[in-house]
Length: 369
Image 1 (cartoon, rainbow, N blue to C red):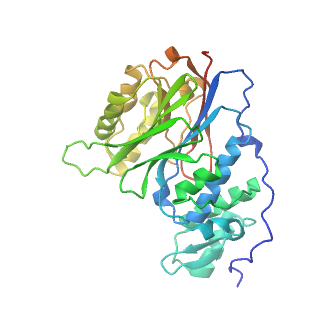
Image 2 (tube, helix red, strand yellow):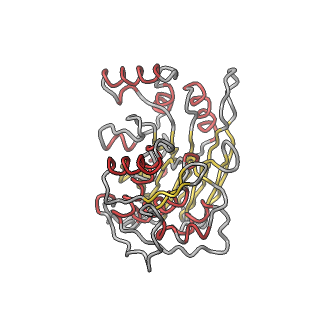
Image 3 (tube, rainbow, N blue to C red):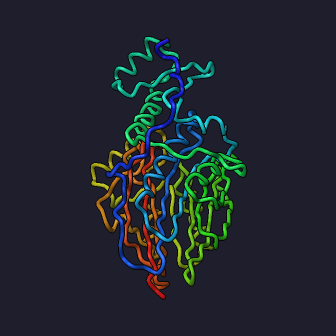
């Protein structure tokens, strides 16, 4: 009985800002400004869709609370593009502290006043060893994150909502979206924006014929026009196991990318200069243990030699962006980015408990009249 789902509350608490996640407000007078956010949401790993959808909405609303850019652009990797449970999303706050586990859908209450060790002990007492604690822990961390933000949102879904991605975009006021399916139509990469003058181009990346089984990958592209200024965005998620495949996929994007542009997303690629000798040795050892190919820097070297800039690395020391302690998420500006009047005035890595990746936030401006 103690683990039963609590009765719905009369209403969610008021949304409050969490200052450590807010970006510094820029007061510079610019002709055109854009805030670009990139995040791998790992939708395929999400077994608690309602909780994750609510947490992602909370995170992005929070991120944009103090943002004054002309346009906001959200790029998502491994995003779910399936039909939502509208009722589940609408009542997510009231029931967010419960999850269902396993094929038998055992109901388990997440008490955020408990420590993680106390939660593990209660799970063991209730279900023995039937369920993986890591699954429960991830949901527990997400609910604690929502509690910390004391988040609320308008959950009235529009009649035009057709997918979970569509729901998230509408709630964020970014109703225009381009989706590039990858493994199947259910998952892929997406770009969401509110700018009316935008053209989306999803395209599949061809596979490298090297005899190995390779997952289908895609690129979501958008051409955004702000007055006299044009900006191209390429959102990608490269192969997870092979540097040769990653390079092959990236070369296809570089061959068609128009200036000026940014290439953002999960590159699954590392660069040796980001790590000390001991750290690089540890990375190689971990890969060998997990029967993965040795770490190489080919993909990042390709971008650097082509003249691409990494504005995040230029502004801060190396910081991991995924749960394995490596940086694999990037936002690159094209070689001629500045020739068209564009410049980066803010670039940062922002932690979030809604996925096992950190978000990249890049703010760009064009002062040409």
